[in-house]
Structures are given as structure tokens and as C-alpha cells.
Length: 312
Image 1 (cartoon, helix red, strand yellow):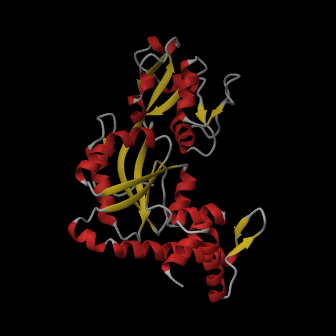
Image 2 (cartoon, one colour; image 1 turned 45 degrees about the horizontal axis):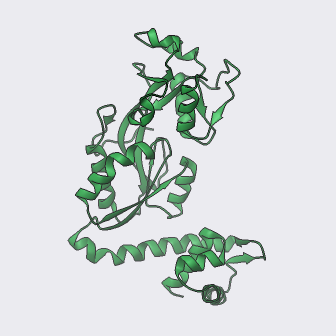
Image 3 (cartoon, one colour; image 1 turned 60 degrees about the horizontal axis):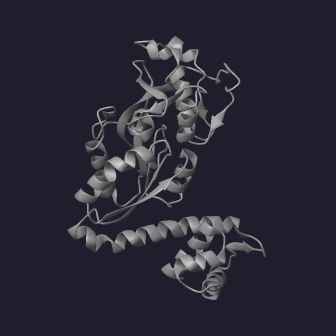
């Protein structure tokens, strides 16, 4: 058994296809298949269940691949020790972020991150909270940026900033003439939300004090897959929605038929945190990323100082 074999089985587990796994590993398919077969013989177990159409992990294969990911991660950390002696921030950093944060935060930090840590290579993944946490626990990524509370003993939560929600409504809405928006105003809105699986929908309902989403119009059951789609619907006059403060820096703020209003209501915000495994060996790199994020945020959000405990 060697490190190369472990990388082979990880590639097949990720792609569920021997041909594409061979391409990722820059070897021929017969070479990759032969090495995996030798490994299975050496271990005395079957890692993959193969058919003409599918490749699936066996139960013991699931455990072996999970352990292989940990071994490869630790070996990668060892290989970076020499570089870290000169630059502790050098090397790739695999970071996941939720879709309602990533498009608005990343443009703010990528250039400053490159300037401060020129040898750090940020590898970005954008998925839902549930999927990001699963990939974090399986060692596929190093840290995630979330807006959801996490309370698990093997994970560290580093709060970064509190992000208020703004109300986006059509320019011809009666709210346009109101100086102040009340909670009663919000309760009477045709409020559009993201589809299930997006944490922003649950956060908006919590902010409104709703256990179930009220249906005030024929559009009440409408759910969108992205914040951009919601804003298109708002601009077309189909309702209103909540947007995180960073999203108000987007191009939709001009000539879109939408008015964005800051809300002066309690609990209408979300906390953005960095979450990572307690065993992750490159914590200094994560601290560097967190510092760049805090230093490059606009005044529409409230920075949480380094070291402040997470609130669950």
C-alpha cells in the first residue's frame, strides 16, 4: 500500500467512474484499476462494487476511503512543513461557502488575500450548508463559511461578522413612501423565499417569527433556487424578499426596478462564521483568511472581533 493507491481510491470514490478517476490522476484506466485491485487483494476486502453501469462503495469501502482522506491530508501537511518554515500561509486552502454569501464576499477579499499571502491558493467550493458540512467532515475541504449555528465537538466555530437583512421591494410598492418599515408591514408582504435546502429561507422565517410561511397571494408558494432569481421576480413586481447586506453591493441595485431598504428591527440579521475541523493542521492559514475577511468588510455589517465565542 502507498500514498498513490490511496489517491486512486479517493478519486474513484469522488467521481464514481474509473475512467474519469484515471484522468484526474494522470494515469491510464488499466493502471488505476490494476492498482486498486492489488490494494483490495492486499487488504482482503472489496472497496468498490462494480457493474457495467455503476461504481459504488461497499460499506467497508466507505470506511477505508474516509480514513484514506485523513492520511492524504496529513501527508500533504507534512510536505508543506518546509514551505511553512518560510511562509506558514503557503499552499492550497480549500474553502466552501454558501451561495448567498460567496458571490458577494469573495470579490471583496480575493485581491487583498493575494496581496497579504501571495503563496496561498484559495480553492473555492459553493454549495448548500448541509453539503458543505458533509464535505468538511469527510476531509474533502478544509473550512466552510456558513450562516448556520453548528454545535459539534469535532468542529471549531470562528465568528466573523453579523450581517443584517435588507428588504428588497418593487419600486412601485406602497412601502416606497414609508419612512420606516415595521414588523407589521413585513407580515403583510408577499414575501418570496429561497427553496428548501437554502439556510437563508429559514433565517428569514426566524427573523419574521414564523413557524410556517404564510401564503398571502397566488405567488405565496413560489420558491426560487437562487437569490438572483428572487431579485428578478421582485424587479418584475411579483413580491418582496430579504437580502443579506453584502448582496446590496450587487449590480441589481441600479436600474432593476427594486428598492433596497435597511431594516431597524431586532433579530433581522445572520451571523457568518468560519467552521473547520479541530484536527486541521494548518490553523494559522485559516486565521490569516479570517483576518483578511474582517479587514475588508463594508460598514453595512458588524465585524465580530477575533476570539469572541460563538453564540448558538
